[in-house]
Length: 372
Ligand code: PLP
Image 1 (tube, rainbow, N blue to C red):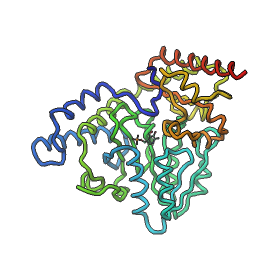
Image 2: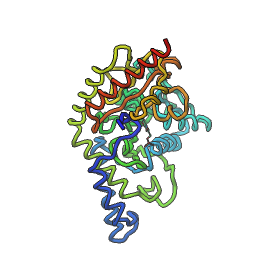
Image 3: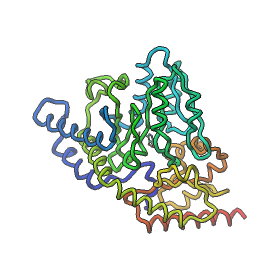
Image 4: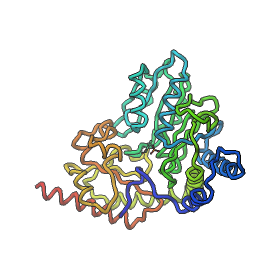
């Protein structure tokens, strides 16, 4: 398999697998139990928490572990609305956010919240004036992602946070695709992240919370995570997340330079009829979302079974619906269905990427010939 689906998930780093192993095997104590073994597990969880906080790099807050970034986002949005002053029941978000944000907002809308979904331009970027116009003293939360999971574009998160704060609202940043790939800008009050996008294990996410901006709990029970998120933590998953975050920070420059080389190689191998979806400049370059007029992208993926790539996003691929992100940047259904997403990263080699690009181009060619 040639793996080009780094936005869906990333391979587990060998350093992470090695660090997790003892916590899956002999060190199985409950980190919330007072025994010597429980305390050892609790200490390992605290080391992981500090490692993740360092990698997030923001001052004045702390991290709570969750079962996924989807949970962290649900918690941030629902818990912030629950705690907000009665006159602040509005949420502002963007049409290209992940379903974890959009569907949570829709759920709250059915229960009385007011949701404003801002549009984006054809480059996928939010217009600051639209945000300024939408903000007022009724807004409790502004939710804007850092790096888009489908088209890779980078939103102006620091400025969004500044504008949100000016009107007294909090800001949530879904940094799932940004952690370890681009720096997380200062400004957000809440930041959602996920281990499996940074070569960590699946089944663990986290919410970074500025002190004082902690949302009301979503999950009730044993009072773990300072009473904010109940449930027994998995030391193996926490340790894996912490090590993945540390490795990502230590390798940041090396990974970045590798991605730049891969992007240049992929762009060079791309036939001229392919068009890049979304901004070229304001972009994380490990994401290449491209379209080719009149190809059937689902068929192309079927024709190239040993290459793992995606239709827009893993979620949109499963539903059969055209991607809401590609529609939001102004593509027709037909153009959206002619789009594929290639995601590459730390373990992708230039040779396999260029080889895959050539085969994708040839498969698109074959579709054109067949249609003619
Ligand atoms: N937000 C973004 C931008 C994502 O790409 C994803 C995963 O695809 C999520 C949120 C959800 O993350 P998790 O898989 O940890 O629930």
